[in-house]
Image 1 (cartoon, each protein chain N blue to C red):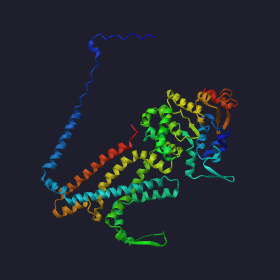
Image 2: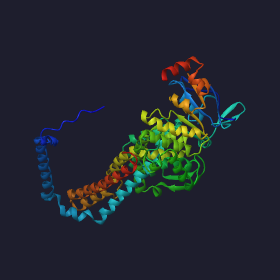
Image 3: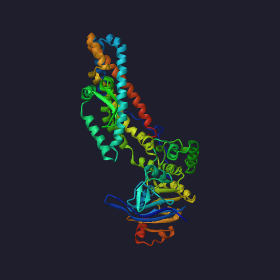
Image 4: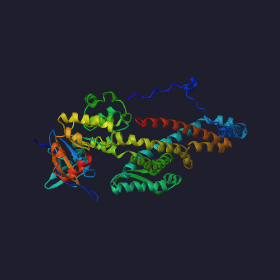
Length: 253
Length: 288
């Protein structure tokens, strides 16, 4: 199976802080990869390089075979013009830890904004799509509500519908349940599990080990800016080979 | 598990929850009465003193020359605020640009136009022809296509509008910048992650949210400018303040005509305050 995401030797520093120290990672099409790891291990940064929210210092990121954010000429990578980067991003859905819904727009407007203005699709096509997606995340009746009036779990489900509205090839989730009250985590994870069964390629950064065991095809464990261990959940979670993976799981399980 | 049974109260009255009696505040009443007396004294002083000449006030309040001057005041305010905020928004965006030249240029502009008193700036624009008698359009440092006499191009009205707008832009730049900075970084990030084009990100996502911070400050500026336009009287433009001076220099009814001007400024700022309230409510959409 060909890879949807291909990372080769990715390095990223914030000033003196070397956050990603040479990450290699392949995510085959249709796979659900869960990334686990302690805080500060570079999980979120890694995810953000995959849609060019963070530019890499060295190495390459390919999505569906195409280099992201750059054009290769010889052994040099030239940054693409912003318009190109934006076009590439419309093929990648991103769900944030803090939802980042647009508070001054209704739920429906949040979902239709990108297909209308980034993909320039007609409203007559986008609005029914948005309504279907809201129904899919169980919020058909909230289309005309403002985000502030929804619970955290509902807001995150709107954010998922907003990401899906671009009909992306790849979905990235950055700790989608970390900002939620414990009793609201389940409803969001259920939506993500439902998507996982639907065959979309997804990378989910999370602390929910139970979710990883249940929904992931593969689990990557990150520590200190590297992928330390990668394999099926039964292997990485239940029989970790690496000492640091064992130490981390002993703390969270 | 069984709960212990709730005991029925022995007497019927105990069922009714006790009423709350608010404490008396005699000092507050006394202070209120004091304020009423002062207000009554002020009203009486305004009404009974014939020196205010209320009949003259009534006679000039809607005089055509006064109404025309009110319209000019409004026109100058609109030009000053409209152009000022348009330029101010550009300056704010320059100021936030990663390009050092753009941001320092904006900083320099704000520094210069906030530092020199408005009245001096107005006099500079009014007397621009003394410095540059001719203005032309052409290639910078190269050939000129059109040439104008400065006097023909920049009359008193243009000079006043230009002076007010350029001065206002320096303040507007800071107001717009604070508004842009008040928008959560996650909003820009979400808009970028969705692939929204830059203009759309600014006008659809960031600016409407920034308006919540911008509008109250801009309201202050607009109301300030309605009254601030009175400084253009030095350019002999017949706005409200200049016009009442012209009239009282002719008829000597100084206090009555100053009162006419004060009443008009009061009306204008009241209307603007009401408009501001509705504009704020519009941009408060989605926020409880």
